[in-house]
Amino acid sequence: MRHLLNTLFVTTQNAYLSLEGENVVVSVEKEEVGRFPLHNLSGILSFSYSGASPALMGACAQREINLAFCTPSGRFLARTTGMTNGNVLLRRTQYRMADDPAQSCRAARCMIFGKLYNCKWSIERTRRDHKLRIEEEKFLSASESLQNLMQAVLTETDLDALRGWEGSGAAVYFGVFDDMILRDKDVFFYHGRSRRPPMDCVNAMLSFAYSLLTNDCASALESTGLDAYVGFMHRDRPGRVSLALDLMEELRPCMADRFVLTLINNRVITVSDFEKTESGAIRLTDPARRKFLKSWQERKQEAITHPYLGEKMPWGLVPYIQALLLARYLREDVDEYPPFLWK
Figure 1 (cartoon, one colour):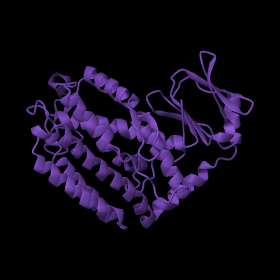
Figure 2: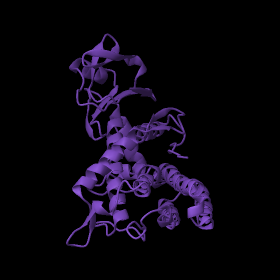
Figure 3: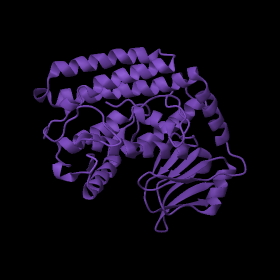
Figure 4: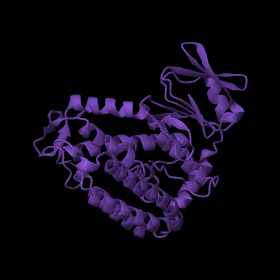
C-alpha cells in the first residue's frame, strides 16, 4: 500500500477493502493490514481481484472519492460512480482543451519535453556505463542536439511545429539506438522502425513493449477519470487511445526502450526466442513472450524515486502518478503538467 497525491494505491494482490466508520480498512485473509480516514483521500486504486465491500463503494460514491480497480498486472477493470460524479467536469475540461490547439500544445509540449529529456539521459547513461564500447563523440553530439531541441519545445505554441520537433528528436535518438545494443549485433540491430509487421528482432521487442506500455497508460488514465481516447498531440481516431499515446511519449525511453536494451544486453532474450512467419515478419515465440512478460512485471516492481514528488515507488505506478498529475493540471491545481524526468 502507498499513499500518494491523496490517492491510496493498494498493490497487495489479495487485499480486500471495506468500510468501518469513516475509514477504509485494508484486509488480507481477514486480517487488517491498514486503515485510512476517508476524509484524507481523493482516490483509491486497487490492483487486487478481491474487490471491495458495497458499503465502501457507496461511501466513496457519496463523497466523490474515485474508487477504481485494475488487475494485478495493471489492466483497468472498473471504476465506481454514484448519482453525481465530479469526473464529468474533469472530462469536459479535457474535451475543451483537446478542441483548442493552443491549449493542446501547451499540455503536449511538456510531454514531448519529457520524452526528449529521457532520450538524452538514456544516451548519457550508455555513454557513462559503456564508455569504452561506444563511439563517444557520436553520443555526445546526439545528447547536445537533444538538449537544443528541448529548449525549442518549451516555447512552442503550434501543434504541427511541435510534432516536427518531436520527429527531429526521435531521429537523433534512434540514430544512436543501434550503438546502445552491445551484444550479438548479427541478430540484434536497429536500422529503422518497422511495424505492422516488425521485420527484425529489435523491432519485434519494441512493438511488444510499446503495446504493454500503452495498455498501462490507458488503464492509468481511465482509473483517474480521464478519457484515454481524447488526446492533445495525437488527435482523435476511432479505436485509438490517443491520450494514452500522448502520456506514453515521455515514458517510452525509460520504461520501454531501456527495458528492451536490458533484455538484449543481459542476454535474457536470445536469437532462439524468435520465429519468422510466412509473411517475413519476426515475432517472439510463445515461451519468449511469457519470459518477456515475466521480466516486464518484475521491472514494474523495482523501486524508483519519482523526480517530481521525491517519493519512492515501484516503476509500475509511474503511469498512474503521471495520470494523476495530468488530472491536477486540467483542474488547474498546478500551473504546468510536470512530466516524468528520469535520470
